[in-house]
Length: 292
Length: 292
Image (cartoon, rainbow over all chains, first blue to last red; front, side):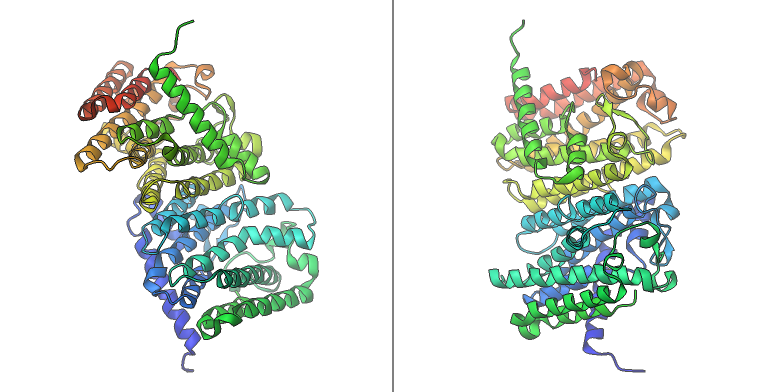
């Protein structure tokens, strides 16, 4: 067996941290609703948003323990969005992370409420954390999750099914739908350490913007190239649903080139941080080369 | 025409304040999703939770302008919960405040997303407000909205349809489903002014608990006694849905007596505050004597 690379050790340790933090965040949630919340959150997520928060925290010299709350908060928002997106009224998906989706396992009403309660819990965890300026952090997360961010992007996504979007429109939609929460993960993690300069904050925003979009381009590629088994969710679904994607717009080869160019953009943004941005650098590598 | 009573002037002014605050909170929400959010929030709500926040603020000598943010936040949480509760997967209601429900007007997917985005906006508004200890305030609102509060109560409500509950179980369900957010409205309003003693905070909690339960008992009475026209929502729905209510459990006369006893309990809790609690006193009067 090969010995673990430093990157592998780091990401395994941080993945364990976030699983523990999510366990703590949801352990007390009562009843069958609590079960549905834990079901929707646990079991096989890549935890890319928490990893970005921990990696951004390192840039600012943050204690990982201080990043636990925002890392858990962004993952809880992500988990709630999946539970709702999978509902029959939305994407109507029955497979997620290799398991039946939340509404298949618990019924529609409870999956809806589990998503609602997960969003509330996300703000509760963030607000009870130890980071500075926790009010500003809650405001930032609210913007990323709301109508100008994730929820708004999802609304545009639904409205654009069966239509053709220009590349700029598709990019705007994804900057809202997935990019906003990914950017918030980086921003919240970075706010757990020493104050950054305005220039540094802008550089991290550029990084997050490119990394977030790269994540979505690769998602579109995997939906075409991957199998349901390796993805843990239904593959080929975008085309079947008539959804505009980077692949439908650019073709496979050009979409792949787009992802690689976005990775280079993300790497460039990190240059001023030097070695402190090592993990952010590696994370976007992983985002672009992942197979699920 | 009769000249307005002080109570009428106060509640009219505060209702105007909250409408303005909600307008400001939602004016910038983009696209058709923003329209759905405004539709779900505006138009005929009683605004009882904001009124409780303003009235509790007076007990602590708070500037009403400081109460605007928590008052809007609790109403946005309430509006989101109505948009989701009315969905076909939940109560499947088509009439609310005399208008088609959000999903009837905008479709299920957008009503779901509007609720999601309203919850995010609630935390954003609260976090961006001027009250002290805004992090603690967000944590308090998150508890009230989440699995141990409103969402959890709704889950119990759904599970109990078609069953018989003991009075204690029905009370617990409503303390979570509606009582938790009403209590949070009082607590958040009171936190906008001078610090209260532990004894005073406990007294306000007792008030809120009794007033919240009284609100629900009267809701159950009106569902039986009122017309759809005067209520602005479908009447007689609880019985048709096989939902346990205070009326189904106690009968009309005993349920009415229960509401009056809870009002007395709420009034008793206010005695230590004297004249500063005048509006809270009048609000529970209104809660118990209202006809819609």
